[in-house]
Length: 255
Image 1 (cartoon, one colour):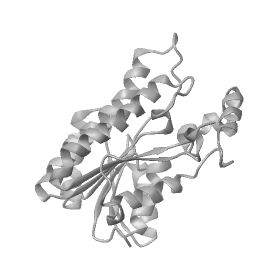
Image 2: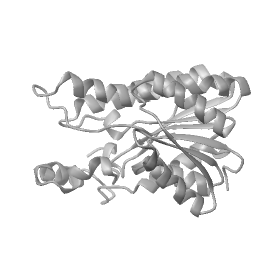
Image 3: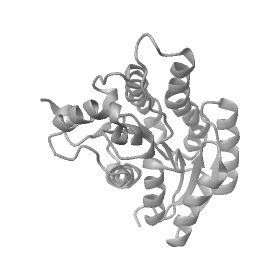
């Protein structure tokens, strides 16, 4: 119960890593706001799981690529939860962007959700944290933010931006009692990458990643990331500001 008495808002909380974090936070005693991107019923499904396990949770919906939607979410969440102690920016998209055949729409969608969404969620929630002189913000990058991955250059760029933005935000917000840190997952089994794990055209990439994974576990579990998020959300990590935790089975460590 390391998060007992805390409130948490988790974007991308209706599936994958965000869902795992929501369930873990609920089990650790936090009152959780689960944010889905478009359908409230997806958030309610996770809320029901948390409640069934004895926790407290509330469903929300917001398109984090739209600032107006983020601002509306912040107001609703603060009204429902009373305050937001922990913000987890887990919402994100991941798809191929090969040079020569990538549309402006796909580029904009990647940056609007992964980078713009992260920043403006912080922009909306941080003022309340500053007023209370207390808060925790957890962003999500990726191993793709610290090494290149073919053909995901736009995704790599968006996740690299998160790492640097986390450092800058930590410098800005640490004097106000707010800790900002980042998790960089490697290959993690979620609905977002089921195509790479199952479709024949990605077999060569999958085999390559397996050969680059020292641990022998090509894909980590979403709950591995959730456990790290609990650490960052708790007092155990109070000395960490602007750090990126790389959880990639050793993939980026070297050949």
